[in-house]
Length: 261
Image (cartoon, rainbow, N blue to C red; front, side, top):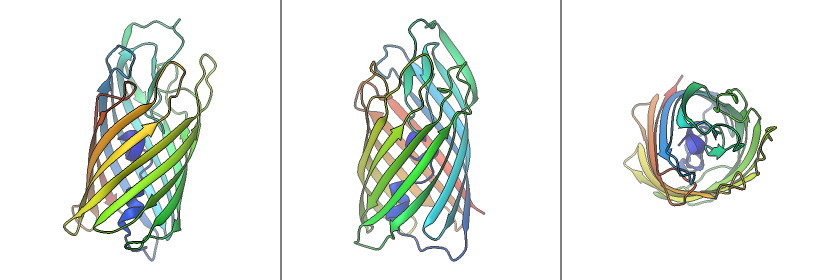
């Protein structure tokens, strides 16, 4: 979940809902927790957990967001948790010891902004573009990050209604560490959301990310989610996913609470 919604706060779902633009700036603070596990095609069990804080400010068609996680990784020492925009662990220099190591600390911060190119209207296609950056705030020495910044741009589309189909296409330019090479990553997402009552919706989506190294494969997973407003100021989002490719986690789950300030 961190890769899709937790870090960036903005998803095509936000475009698809078509809420009225606030007259003044809207500020939302959030708390989130995410957990994933699997082998990611490495043959070893890899478990990652994180808790994050974030802030999003929206003014008319423009939103700016930032988040910072605390992460914990239980994996072989030659596995790096990239976190941030990609959420993919990667296998680094084979010369580095593969002894299992538990490590934790501050993860990579994510900042960015989103612009609605075509505002949401029922039964009309809405478009938005998001630019974001993963900042290297995590320790590369402990395998909590690559130590380099990543930059991404994502185009999102949705057709709001009782049933909202949505899609997104993104491209990430990855920073290059000194000891191993990373590939730039293309991402794609498609799915449908169903409005339930006046304040909730459920969604089903398929996510794809191209390989980040020559030794890993493409990541593909299927996710289900629930978004609901608990009150005029409090919102809750939960999501779970399962991998359908060897390089995806076997299972992931996350929860996020948002508070409108």
